[in-house]
Length: 372
Image (cartoon, rainbow, N blue to C red; front, side, top):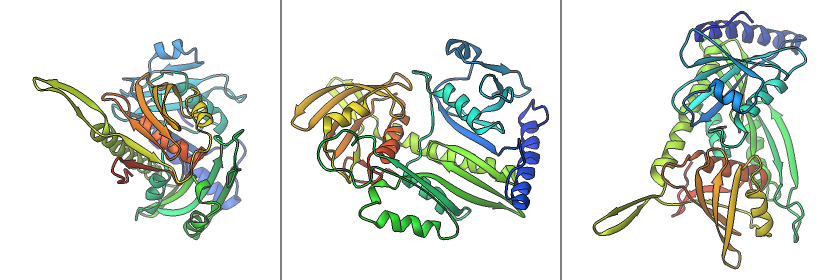
């Protein structure tokens, strides 16, 4: 790819790259050796910018190179690929979301983005897309739903006493016009329906005489092929805007706010509820996993037992260091999001509960109304 010093340069280069790779796949049914697809990674960020100080502090082998555009960074990472340096381009879309574009090798670019996001307290995270969110993206009239993949791993029942879960693990991919019908059939199966979280949806979007196909994962990675890079960018920006609206809704309408006046204290906001379709059999084991400080949940917490099978947890979100208060019982997790805490923790918790415990779990208001 030619030298890139601006957003315009990037768009022109990626248009050529995606068109060439798309033609190769159509004609040869495979990519040429050394060729890769365009990949874009959305990042939710509470940082003002990605700085050299951050790179040095985290001891990352990444250099930030200058460009002609403000808020547009060229990242050159070394040591991630035997083929040489890996180039990525970070666009600070707004004060909350960034996107990283790259045509580097998949494993190398996945690792670079992982290293940027996942040390503790980086103030960066992935936008986490629950089942309902991905299904809504696939059902939009401008999108053609062409494939899906499922991946479920029951992390919470390993070592539990009692009954064996319906499905310990499930992995599946399906292409074709009937993908949506097959997905619905799986979700209606009593033995499988709690184990069918969407890992990826494949969406085709036509822009005039051109088309682009995006595979979108539940952690907001896009893999594109087609002859319209504009269509790919629009898919990324549309999803970002929809997710941003959901995130601000959670923070504005449901966060717990405290105030005082001459008449005393006042509390606004309401807790959120993750309601399970499957009962937690071993609550202690469940909480050990949930608050282990490990990916993907990134939560640490101190628990206080209030009653049998009923706990209150004071926790810390290791994405930002923000506080989070929860209550846990066998049928639900209640979340109290403090004012000014990052609401992305709610969607991270909810999405990963769907992938690792119960894909039929629902995010609800206290009165039972669906949030998504």
